[in-house]
Length: 485
Image (cartoon, rainbow, N blue to C red; front, side):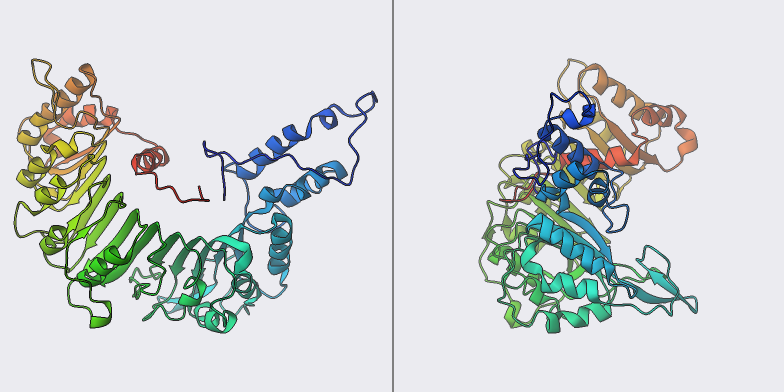
């Protein structure tokens, strides 16, 4: 959905209406009908983009409600294409009304719509049948019609952004619906949440293989008994065009990861799950080092991948701003691997999250000049944090700046600090000297011995989780995609 520079919706003034403009000299014209069209456009924009707005295509859909107030309002709303560009759908249960409303929105939006679709998927849980990802909680014997999903796939040329939560039946329908993969497509953002296992991306590829795709989300939905889905990676995605790719819970080998880095010419943000093992020769990467001046955000997850020394040693990302690494075991053999990787960053990081690590490795990292601009530091998997780390984060007695002077969000776990008040003293000293934190999450081995610390930490903790999430999102590197917001 295109928005203005400040994130608000655009408010273009409609150019043609069936109803003539009101005669303002008539004293019987209601005051609200005397307002200029541009003011109505602002009213409608705020109604449609507010947090309480209902994007589901039903009788509460905001644009539809606006058209039922009066004839002038209907004319205004129908002639504002941007008002109809975002809507949410669910699987049909036999009346096909969702597909008809979607067609109406596409017609009035005049292309470039953003659609969300959630499939009905039957799961087994404790011997009983449940519907998951369904708005209504329908019984398991409900007959599901695929008209909505079929409509979306057949009309990709009118869709700019698509968010799908799909199961096995919908997945099997894609190749038959998208027989001509070279058919026109304007799809630039695609987010896929899979409610079933997939062993290959072959059935999904017709959605994006030849689309001008810029953002790709590829995420497994866990089953009701919390068993993770098994997903194959989207190797046939247009990696040369992608700007943002999020492959959470999709294991790929380190060779496949390096190959993605090699062929991606525009990739600015990547989240990937690396595992051990070799890849076949079809996806094996080129042998030389990778120097990528485009990458801004890199999230690495390594579960059962073994040490990642060779991966970081082969990459140089001079303009990296956000780096996150999460693993189940020590991610490096050589202690200096991560430090050497960070030294090759030129502009300085803003977000740094590491788990697990030792205190000495963490201190070696944050002492680098490249870390002087860090705003968000998380070491929740760092074992046995002591007074050493807390002291270097505290301003000196001669007003010398502490390490990480720009730090606003701090998250630490398993602190092995003996004396109560050490953390409280650091937080208060940073505030006095102009280096105050906005949020602190710090855990101790025995919290009963740190009453003063915990009391002070609580004062620096943001209680509203939505606000904290918004802060973290704001600290992430803003990735700009031409034509998108």
